[in-house]
Every structure is written in structure tokens, then in C-alpha cells.
Image 1 (cartoon, rainbow, N blue to C red):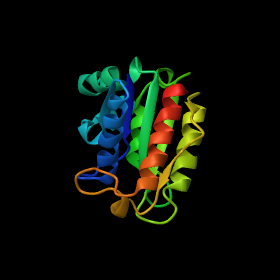
Image 2 (image 1 turned 90 degrees about the vertical axis):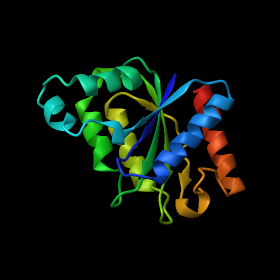
Image 3 (image 1 turned 90 degrees about the horizontal axis):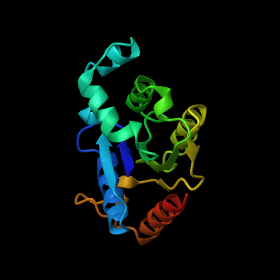
Image 4 (image 1 turned 180 degrees about the horizontal axis):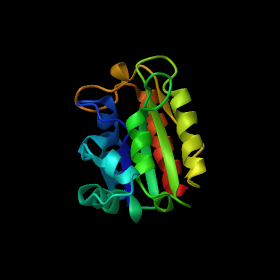
Length: 173
């Protein structure tokens, strides 16, 4: 099982569309995958979990998507020159041992030209701190609003090839 993490909590995001596309492509390769959309997080998880309190709803999501999963794909949008604070808050609320020695792939999306380059670098640092091995192939998709259409398909053949290449490398990683 691979968990694909929608690294934002915005409604109708390109991040969620890309995550669903990645899930479909993994399933076409016979790989089980689930999507954890951060919009599903309970609104009060941050305060309770960071203070060490129990939160059954949050714990259920962690059990389903993080604890026993060994590979993650983070679809990361660029927000203000880095990744969204919501994904960092989520990571901070998960017990670090649930990340140790696991593997991750990162996919960057952005409206601008850099394709979330700094966001990918910043997230790599956070994951390395948690002892997560990160795949070196980190595709970036600048101008995501032109690459990904409303139905969740990629319009650009080169972008589609880059995504497939990353997925294939990650499955072998």
C-alpha cells in the first residue's frame, strides 16, 4: 500500500486532482494506493495532538494512512515560496516513529514557473530529519493550471511522461 498525501487543505485544489491521477496510475500498475486529503483532518487535531491528548478521529486516519504504510507520495503545492503549513502541522502531530525508515516520493505543483522547487527542497529536509528516504526524482509541474485539466487529466505529453517515470522509479525504490 502507498499513501498519497494531498499536502493542502484547500477545496477543489489541483493538488487533490494530481493525487487522484497518481492513484489511478498506481492502480493501473497493480499497486494498491490510498489518498489522504488533508481536508479530512479534524479541525481541532493540531491543538490536541501537539499537546499530547488523544484524538480518536485523527488517530484513525493515522492508522489507515500512515502507521503501517511504508511508502508515501506527497503532492506538494507551492505556497509563499515553500510548502503549505498544514502539511507541516500534520507531520508534527504524527508520532515521529511512524515515519522512521520509510520511503517517500515528492511531486511539486505550482502556478508559477519554478514548479515548487523550494517547497520540494524544504520538504526533503523535513522528511530526512524524520529518517524518511526520499526518491531523488522529484518531478515539478509549473503552470499546473495549464497542464492539468478540470477532469484531472494531463494535457501535456511531456508532463505525463515525467509523472510516469517518477511512479515507475518509486515502485522500484
